[in-house]
Image 1 (cartoon, rainbow over the protein chains, first blue to last red):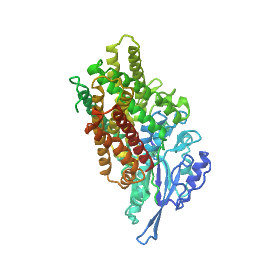
Image 2: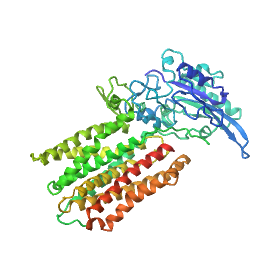
Image 3: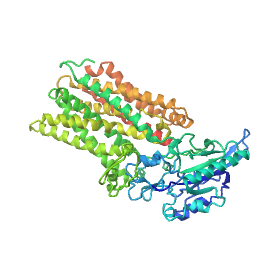
Image 4: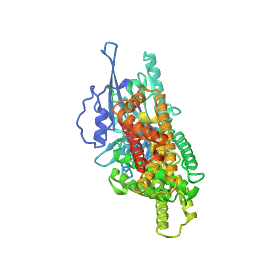
Length: 258
Length: 311
Ligand code: SF4
Ligand code: SF4
């Protein structure tokens, strides 16, 4: 396996210009969509089959309901080291590349939509025209030709950085220290720790507040972790039911007392 | 209002129908197998009808799934692709073009559907041939019944485990859905056999009464699993999960949940059973009770899946 590639999105540098969102659409030839009124500058509510990159806007209000601070975060598929979508996929359409990214093979996907509900970040979207699931690929065609994703190239403030994961982790930690000394005491990394939740995210973030401020789960969980426990409980109830059957159908004939 | 981050697969009710029929098939098959193991002669009608129902209920499964996927050959991708990738998940096994992913309940369930269909076909064929006056192949039937029984349990339970392995707030901390779906399979499988028996009549001796006793027992397991499901979800704590649970038991799904899944599907049939009404009176009561159980069995799966997908 080649060195893991990663994307580091530093929200402290984001100006909400959405150049990344547009660049993504252009490179991936994603068709235009009807705008959606979300109440903020954000468009759309969710990732769609035609928006793989999405700049999220959050308005933090004070007690009087006045806007205190704007938060902007350019969101993307996290290419999780332990990916719910990949584990869920019954067809093997979702696979991990030699760079550690997670892709959906459009020829294999059968449109079951299981991955859509299995992603802890709501990333995968179903394309009703092709009947397949789609999401960000880190611009698979570009990274295999040494170009880096279109969004990172387009970002005018270098809020989106792309490179080898280990290199970016060093950059990210330095940036956190810098921000802390500037007084941003809540600044924190999200998904950088590869021994943390989901084995680390290959698109990790620098946030200026708690993950929940950005609508992110504090402790994202791999849904397939439930399979063992749920299966054991199912087996337990199967044993109980089978035992009930043996008792009900066994014994002397001729009487049917309860 | 925050729209939230998560997305839903938005499976149509077609999938609920498949899960419902799969449960009936699995439950009926296991009941027929147990009855056959204990006394194939005495419970001949339960065995025969059980295996027929299992076969008839599982047969629409692949068709329903194919309709949902849109393109017929796509269903095959659940089991095989011509060029499998190497890194497709934890403990994934590929043999030639085939792949098995133990941590993808949908993949494992597709295999179970295939395996169960084979055994359900063999069992139905065997009871059919015997009924037509052919020799009964006792040993073969036992082997088919026991191996098929494992697939049957799997088929009934896996949809619950499948839901539990998503990020949907109602399901992610639930844990009891597989157990619940299994119990629903047993109760609806028993009810389906009882319905046919009481309509056709002719069952000798106490077989029907014993079947109803088993079905009532399965309903108690079903009630327990449902209660544990609600309890587990309610103690999981996060705001999103609480909202999803409220939607199920008090929100727009509250009425079908309490009236359909709990009262019609569990409480009334159990009351009938324990009041002894079923044993003493006409087969019409047994038929009614079976119908209620079937309606409630569909309701509980439908309402949980719908609420989980909506919130
Ligand atoms: S963020 Fe979602 S879609 Fe992306 S790799 Fe992780 S689980 Fe899959
Ligand atoms: S929709 Fe496609 S990519 Fe997603 S889980 Fe199903 S087969 Fe896999």
